[in-house]
Image (cartoon, rainbow, N blue to C red; front, side):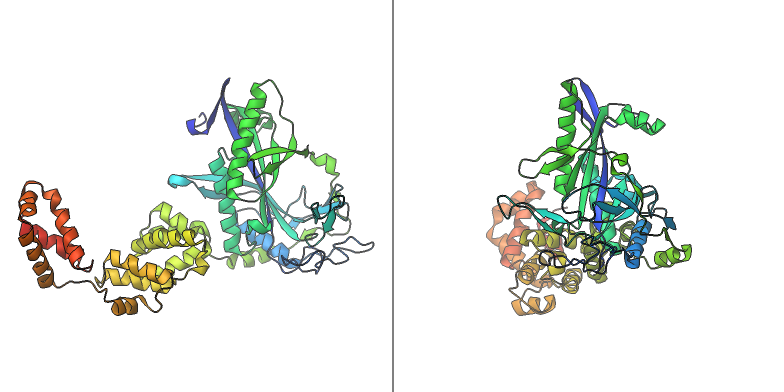
Length: 501
């Protein structure tokens, strides 16, 4: 089976395929660091959260943080992955000024989490499965700061020793859309689990984006044989911290590599950096192979062993995850797969929707949350937790539409008043206070229709020839009643009086 047409990139010498893998670094939600009791809180002053262990003072020994191990297991379970009850920490040796030990404590051949798989939703409702290669625990390095002085660099070790989960995907993504959607789904899962806050702006979740290109058809040969030489040489772009940037890196790198190869050049295996201003990548350093890091078991740490019973206990405590919630929204509320996935993607949005849906109409609740509410929040630059309209208020507002107290149009006006803070109190109180109740008295509506028909005999005749022009009368009735007339009653009475089938 060949590559799908949408996954081919056209070059001047033929078609190419792009192959993408992501290494996502997710900071563990933990009060203290992986091997010390120092605070892992974000936002402290320079070097305020540094213990003697973090600073690699002589004789200081690491002690594993059990809670961080539990968080890694929870994440692995959320990725439908194999949990290894025996794993080991290794030393990854390299020199950098903000790495005080001269090595990083990580996991190499024996990670705590093995292979898994997640379902990823794409635009338009299509889904793909992306394999997880592994998840391992490691400590973060510090931060070098180069812009405080013209000839000096500063080092902040607050991040040194902070617990990271590195989640490595298999090279199974084929477009920029798939890469960004995978990153988004991973973020959704860890936020549901409470194992990482997913705040990309603070650096607590970032991706190293691996991209390679190959001639059309070679990806299928790789899948058949497992031979990575079919995929071409990959580059790794470090520390990409937004979905938009992931897309840009993939698109730029794929095109750049094709241009180099078609020009007779070769792709260097290297680490690159992304320039957000220009939307381009540039060389940072040549890419090291595993042997360059001289991995060996950390002599200060015993192998990490635990009982399967502990894993089972953690599994039993897992919350309902996005996929399960999505399928429940489809079955319980009759939502489309797309709307269900949009609402289930974020834990707070899902909870908000379920509260609104207590109005008794899941589809209408979904339309209001994904349409009017999300639109207003986006325009105001607010998160759903900051919504001026509570879920209970929105549910009550929808209830007023359902029982014909107000029309959908008036409901939008009431929503706007609540969102902008022009009115407080319940939707029913606002409707009562402003006299917005819908006119359902057919006698009153009929009187308005008679008045309009008497004043506009030409339009009455025109409707008989062109029934579609009845919409003019609907508009006139709604205008005369300040939009309060029940639209269904208006349409039925007009059809009867104008003789429209």
